[in-house]
Amino acid sequence: MTMRQDGPSGKLDRVQRAAAEQFSRQSHRYGRGHILEDTSDVRAALAHVALPNRASVLDVATGGGHTGLLLASLGHDVTLADISETMLKRVNELAASRGFSVTTRQHPAEVMPYPDASFDLVTCRVAPHHFPDCAKFVREMARVLKPGGIAAMIDNVVPEDRATGDYINAFEKFRDPSHVRALPATEWLRLFTEAGFMVDTTEIFRKARDFEAWAGLQTVSDAVRSELRRRLKEVPPGAAEALGPETREGKLYFYLTEILVVGRLTG
Picture 1 (cartoon, helix red, strand yellow):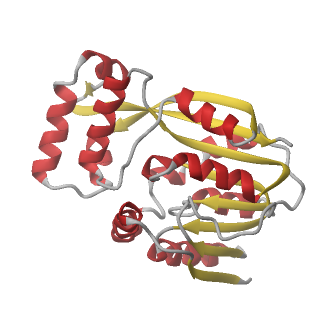
Picture 2: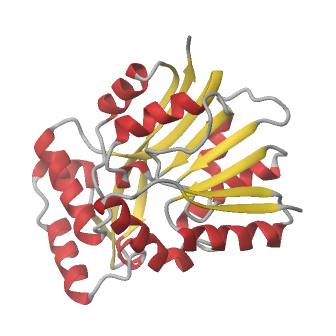
């Protein structure tokens, strides 16, 4: 088994530095037991993807490494990238414990230190709402993919109504300051198309969230937790329809909406 971890590529801007610090502090929460450890959504996405038997794969903003390590378990050559050095150290430890050979690279999603046409598949799962420039991120995916290569992305989305989207984004950012903006679905499709992708698959799905577990992911203070709960209970009509807050057996739940986009590079 071999693993390589390269240092950061390029300078980070203020938002990227804040995100790196935030995820480094929370890195211990992204391994075993994290909500993203359930990779059923990734397996569903891969059903839409035809890959070589041993594909070259890049997993951007890998976090706990769950997507990349699933792909490594399928026999692919996987590079796991993240903005947080601490997160990557934990990913390396997890890979070693499973006997996988992977490469890790530290860099932001918008600046990928790879030659053009390096990968068969680029993945990114539930992370782009932290990126300062999603358009640049999508262009970078296109640049590092081989002709005919595939990008598979999953991320939170907000309704098309701007006021509703702003409310949900402010709600998310109040819990997690590294949150930048979840996009509406139409904006994601436009970014993929403008970057030269033919969109093969899109799916929208809602996922229930236990409020206490969701708030605990960022270890928020009691005051922040109380304010988040108030914002769910006093949510305006449009956001109420999207978030769907409800109480079950004395526990507060709500919903987040995600999109899967699978695009094939044309040209």
